[in-house]
Length: 166
Image 1 (spheres, rainbow, N blue to C red):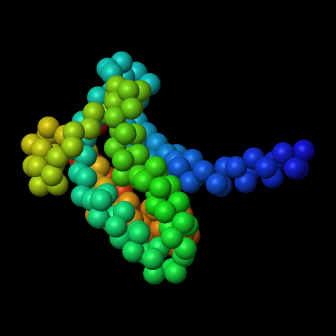
Image 2: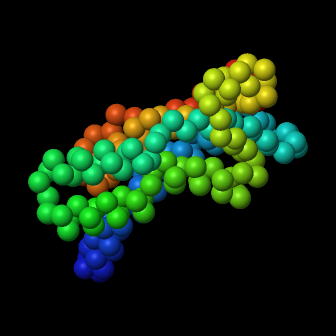
């Protein structure tokens, strides 16, 4: 029994994408659900429709270059660097987050529109949006460094909820 558990844990930790999703998805779901259902009572029969601006400041191409430079500074063999870069491109943290919000089940009650931060702020002030979800610059590099190299991450996804919503 213990050998099966050990094998399953080893397989789980080798799949970086699964580890990243296992860490980020529950946190993100908790935040979104907490915000979405904070003002809803059992008697509400209206369908929930949250409109959020998705501000994507992260540049994946630059992040992958920066991550490759980080790997080169670690004096790894070229084969190891190539394997890690291939794995990093399959992880694509900001791409995973964008596709998460485009998921049909989630998009049925939270509608995200990709836009600039200024435009998102204007639309929140005008009441056209209830929230802003911001993926900051450096998010991809920090997540890759944390998941693949065990380095601490400095950036995080930011949520801004309008006071007048809900």
